[in-house]
Image 1 (cartoon, rainbow, N blue to C red):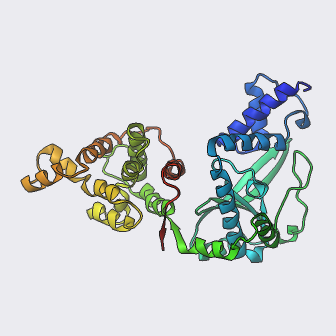
Image 2: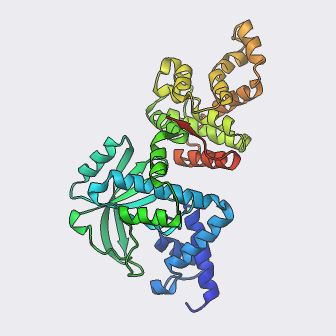
Image 3: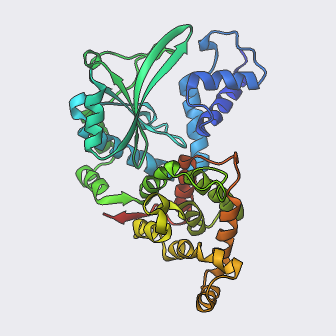
Length: 375
């Protein structure tokens, strides 16, 4: 493939696919980009753009869409990586991937190699940190060769993917299956040195301590929303199924109506979180669980979304009816009620929970900067 212009076009398209998280592997992104550009893939891997070429294009895309925020996010992710690595120090962790190289993009996770002959030892250590995790055995086939990798996915402020290897591989030099070059890795000491070198005078220990002193409100939302998947609802009123699917439908409707209104969008997504806590009084239970992590307006919308049913049916008492009608958020309460009713469609297409929370986090950062609450 001697046409350098075409090679660059493939690199640009592959970078777009990876930045938008349509593809997560360089290998498949290259092949899909080549096919989309009408290039029949009959060449050696070296004839396609290199991983580095695609990473450079990803960074160009990230600079356009994210600006300086990308550098702040990169530093936060490296500090989060160091904190996790220290907690798992006995498994000789090594940071790899985009957080190490600096090529983070939308949805990037933190990739770490850990070494143990017993996966349960690692998962027990993660349990002791109070973090949710999921074990995955992933089958990969490249060039006719099959391998099975063990991954541990961790939900935290930034998502982690730990790849588990036997203990005797701790000093093994891992090489890229495509380029044949050694994969960049950093130990705890090397990552600490890198952070201090890049940030002279940086209070690394203070930043690490600060992570433990702050609670990310979006993780609170996640923890409250995830149990809704197990809340089965009366099919007469909710033919769509579980309470999480319903909440995501209402969120999608709200995003169509008010894509700029974070407080309203949060009310749409969180209005039923109490159903996994106290089904008999889900409004009060949800508000109690959300206290301190939502604004007064969001709380007001959630607090009255059930009263709006009686208001519409003209069964609400006279005083309560007048009080609701004079509520400063009355029109928004009634809109939320309308969307709540519309979010009951079997088989409706919705974002998954991570995508919904990522949208809200990005909206918050664009509007006000990241918001956290004190523990």
